[in-house]
Image 1: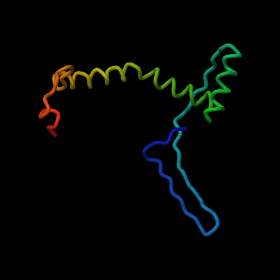
Image 2: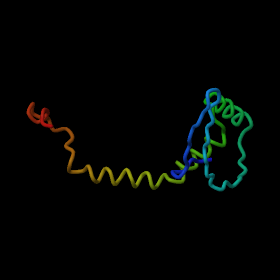
Image 3: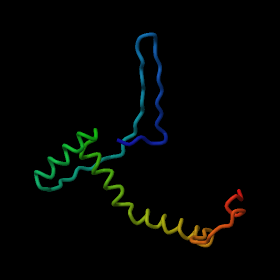
Image 4: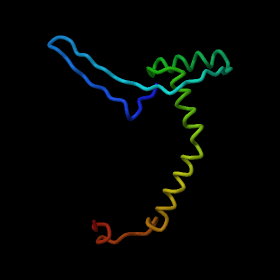
Length: 101
């Protein structure tokens, strides 16, 4: 499940009990089947347990990164284009230049 910007949580309590209400809107999920070496799967499950997560959660995180790789590369190129010409690399600054704010 993902927590969307419209989600809210609120906490109320009486003297003994705290109540927390969280509204989640889950995006529809689709099941897929993957094949991998059994030992590799077990090793991955063990790592996920140690990291307090699941293989499903890690796969979803990987899938987002994989699917958006081109977008991230384009974002990087835009930032670098903006910086080009504004940042001088290798130029030794004078003491006054270094102290300018």
